[in-house]
Image (cartoon, rainbow, N blue to C red; front, side, top):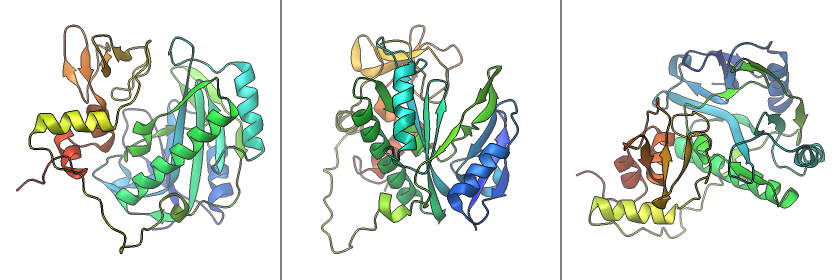
Length: 301
């Protein structure tokens, strides 16, 4: 399979259409993104799927990584970027300070795209490359705007069925007309982000937990992250102004969306969960499968 992107429209429409990126993986992608006329919830994805239908199970490969960056204000709420921060980040992107090939703003954050020179069909290697791309973008933004709360959404990086709104799209009735900035014009080989390790290197094995509860505690402790104190966007259901830190236990989250589905446990007036629930949702598997995959539980007999 060649280097393609999948494009479609509508959040509830999994069916897309495959478009070949001609010749230059970077500028070809830019031409496709900029030539697409605005449509309601028009989206694109670096992923390819069986039958061009979005699903993690049908993932066939990816032509790059789309890093999603969210800005949060002083109250921890997902909000519009202040003008001074936006100007500083745009200057950095134009000057090649932000890693990646293609950059554009979103209403409350940024999109940074790494374009591969060829299709990646290895799931785990792709996920490793995506996480490294996110780490590099996050570090560069932190250095450029240390006071700004800019967060890389890791759930986007790990979701093999993820769509990204097109730079020119109509979302929730509001048109988006983002200017595209081209950083590095040379495509990013996946080896740079996820090098193949020498097989002679020693493999360090994690101790396998005896019980599921022990495995969950260890996983959450070793993958701890800070949840917003205010009303943020839920990484599981995708709704806004409903997600935040569980007051009774800061290591867990709560979502107050009445239409929440996809992960967590129903509580009194909200859903609650932990890091494991988010990572399992991003991987489109059950939490116990993540524990087994990452060595916290022994494989099924």
